[in-house]
Length: 109
Image (cartoon, rainbow, N blue to C red):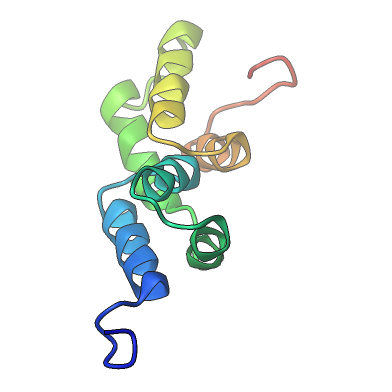
């Protein structure tokens, strides 16, 4: 089956990564899903090498949650928590917040 290209773990892992990226999930969530599906560590890491956080999608989620109002710190923290639950790394969340116009201080996380 492998000779005929019917069993290709790398292609499977890449397909799962693309699917979860399109659905708006971050690297950590995708890694968890690959692990859940039994993809080997090396294969999963290889698939995730091509992962890049979609700041546009993250900004859209921030806008959906915040509606442009960054004055309520609790609401901003809830939006950050939503991004974390979707599997985004803090560095990516910070970049999305800055792109959205939020002022980030060191004790924000």
